[in-house]
Image (cartoon, rainbow, N blue to C red; front, side, top):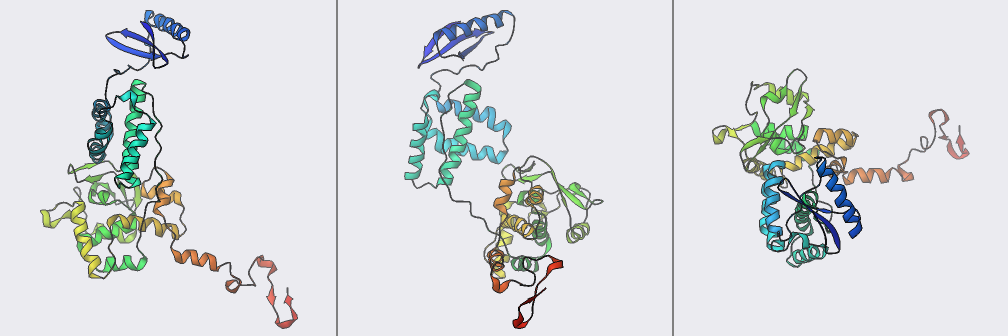
Length: 371
């Protein structure tokens, strides 16, 4: 063991069982480090684990650790689509900027330079924040694994994400102008709020005919052409209304995909194929361009307009937090207008306003009010 001071911080260097540990003393002083060294000596003499993380080499660069983090954390813990997105951000943005820097030397100033470089290059604040989110998780793992000091990372301010939804009339136009499996998929999107990948990955075995419900346990991933768990990583149950139940029951099967593409030898649909089917329908009826995810927004909006609580909408959509659900529920301008007009005396029923049922007031000519 040895006690040493590195950049104004006292450490204890330990080698035990062919492993090296560099531990920061609980008190940042030489005496405190020496006392901590004595404690660690007694633990090792008793055969106890010192329970601290192995310190990383001083000269390890961000690039070296970033790819180690990708292999040891991202691949085991993230879905394929997330792995792809993080790998792209690492290789195209983070490694070119931070790659040669020593991992321990990265500080808040470097991160602000990275943000400024992105802004000067015309990159949107949202895209910069996506990159910073990956960087923050990478450096947080460095902190947890190797006690690397975690620099402050502040995200840029962004406007709320733009969301859109269809009116009831637009929904009717889509359904009356479509047919076959595409119409079925449109209807199930509008009546269940399922994500596009969840609809494409829906299995016949996931439908409970007795309880008239389905369980969302899969999503179809285009990148590796396989079924994975839903975005929330948990199953959720959605009741089927009479239209959906009858529609699915008419071609009930025991197993396999519920929706398959007849133009592709009945292979599962891809997101690209679905978009190719939806765009011509919108053009045919002279409707603005719609997306499949817009149908999910529409589902949430219509539920909230009918007075259902956000907690119920959250469970049906499969969100982990209600904050996300609030972004998917909208109040149309007509509802806002109705609320404002309700306060205008010209729209108020004087005989009802502010009175209990047993204490109504009625107008009687010029003689005033009669109880």
